Length: 401
Ligand code: SF4
Ligand code: SF4
Image 1 (cartoon, rainbow, N blue to C red):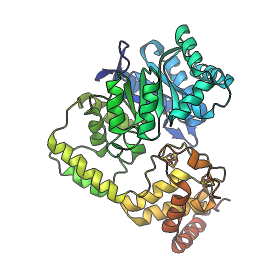
Image 2: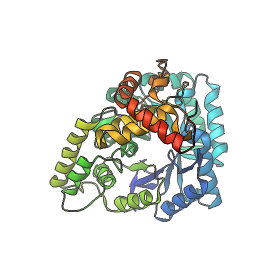
Image 3: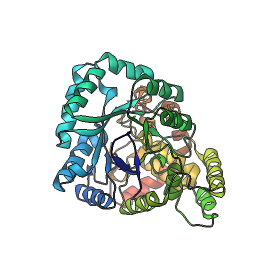
Image 4: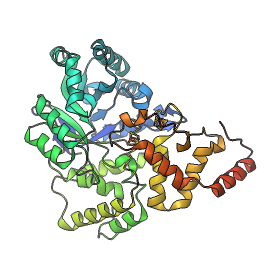
């Protein structure tokens, strides 16, 4: 495993961080046994940075991570990153309350890397300051309950720079991948943070899987033209580690092969490792994606739950799939979801009441309501509905309301 420094003068961290936002699940619960196996495999291979947050898995990510760390006696050997749910704070006293809950859930006395979660503008940071966050940080750092302070960001590039320059941050976390080189904080933000000596953690390196296994055939074909065979995930991660300004890349690894492959790529992708030919391959692939993608949804789930039951990332995934892989499968998935076929709950875009709640939380600033209408219009099909109805009857299952 390669190690890079995130905070000046602090410990070196594995360049691959374990993202605990997408633990493996069994039904709607975390598959704790499998999560432990995967975390301990990564730990044995040298991964020492584990990232969680208050809302991940409905609060269970912190609990499961804390349990695994304690059970295996590795608290002193790993670094936990956790985040204050800044977007839920509307009273000063809530800051300590959330922090205490997190310490309890993680079953630890301290958090190594603590971030203000999902700041999206200087205003969001100033609101926290109005609630007394600076005193909180000072007190927790003094007591050792927080070792390093940072923020995670989803928003416009100029707002990222403003937040960076407003406080003596030790590190920050941004979305960065070859499709988001100029979105959100982007390359300019990455470079500015580096100039200021603020370490950078990367999230969504594969855009919720869209740049990995779900990559369209055209993309895979372009990658395969290169003399060395690599998976789309390998290319995506290699592109990020090619940047010397990056310290840690978070990956949500919920399948054994992902853990193994990511570790292998982390071991071989050094800063400046990509040659001109490789850069040309990635540039061509970016072009292919730009032509195909309908909605830039990363599947982060920040817009969820929808009070009216719409599976927003699910609808966008089907919508993009139609353009990545062709229509039939995407339509069948979408129509099945919309009908509540095969025992699943109805969750189609047609349930949307236009309330707008989801749009307040989307880090990609997607016009969710408009795009849901587009998705429904393009994916719904009377013929497919009839086919699924017959298939449901044949399988002896009823659609659910
Ligand atoms: S706008 Fe539609 S999808 Fe968004 S929260 Fe409201 S009902 Fe749900
Ligand atoms: S619509 Fe936005 S908030 Fe919802 S999953 Fe997609 S990117 Fe995330």
